Length: 493
Image 1 (tube, rainbow, N blue to C red):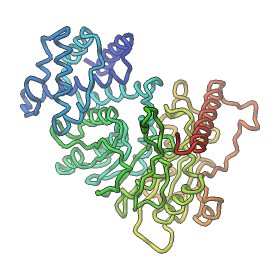
Image 2 (image 1 turned 120 degrees about the horizontal axis):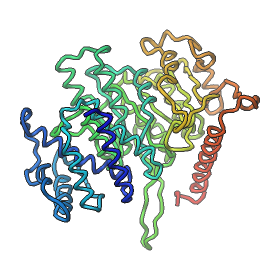
Image 3 (image 1 turned 135 degrees about the vertical axis):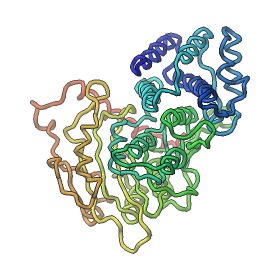
Image 4 (image 1 turned 180 degrees about the vertical axis):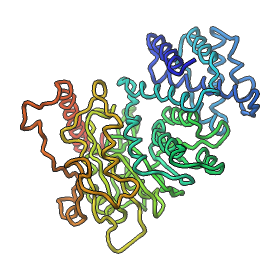
């Protein structure tokens, strides 16, 4: 059976469940549990004969030949019991719940999965099916999952620039569904780039990746995504921790950090008061290793990423525009980052590429350095992929081709041999440390290209793109205004 036809079957069934009010997110989650059980069952049989550590009374076969209420009760029991197990199994089933209320539909989904032999499908085939589901879930605006999904073409471009090497460690402190890990895995396992020996393959599978994800359901989807792509094993220690990575200083340092921290500037936690009302309280992280204490989550992530790197570690981080221009704590973080590391490249991203609306973002690339008396950043190269460039998620999606010129200008083989606007016309420029430090608030939000739509009425973008850009600007403005109001009310109440 072809990949396309399996994907089609999996999707068709999702539509049946949607009519019952089961969201894409809930569907993917139930699929995760059942797929995991089915593949564990396949691995326990010849030719693999693995000890999969799943009790017989809770395994895949225990679900067969049951239907109706009996099936539902047994499925709920499996979810509860396996959530208490150790290792990958316990993490996948942590606080798992049955969201399919109709036992007949559950029975059909089990049969759909049982009809396939999943283990023999290549990692790319299994991965394609699951990644397709995750993207569909992200595109479903009602699910809110878009905030955990970074465009895969952007991730690929970031990985191409960083060029991770075998036997080196890669971390993501806000790993979502694991997109950065999968792209790095593909890059390192590409035979055209590296010929891996046995120990390098082992390292790639079990020791390369470390991630943190605060949302349990997302962490679960990430684990399954990695497992389907051949990262980790049924009984190995999960490469993902369910935790707020900002809370503590990292005990391990990494060679590379690639991440897209969650959008939304303020960190807060919901407090239930004595009278039963709820209020949000600003969350500041008292970290001795941070340059400044702030409730701005984005600035905290920048400081945290730097603290995670080895002395010669490299980072690529997606950040919203405010990180580049905000005063106060923002200015402090920018100045210290320019001094303590080599902030060598910024990619100004176009609008209309994220599922979370109203986002204007950039990628900052920096290399960590040991302590020194003079600033490490000598010049910052900026590539403007935003001015006069328009994308939408539906009709004009960004493709990898759209990022190839940036990758070429970045010159991953030797970034010290770059040329201004090498191929990107006027889009690629460098600015010296002295130029940047003399700007008001050390503002890194630098643009120099003329916005053609402002003066040329004949070359306006399509109406749907214009409308989307207006919506994005309004939403970005509303988000900023909301934060001002919360600040005025004190403690974000």
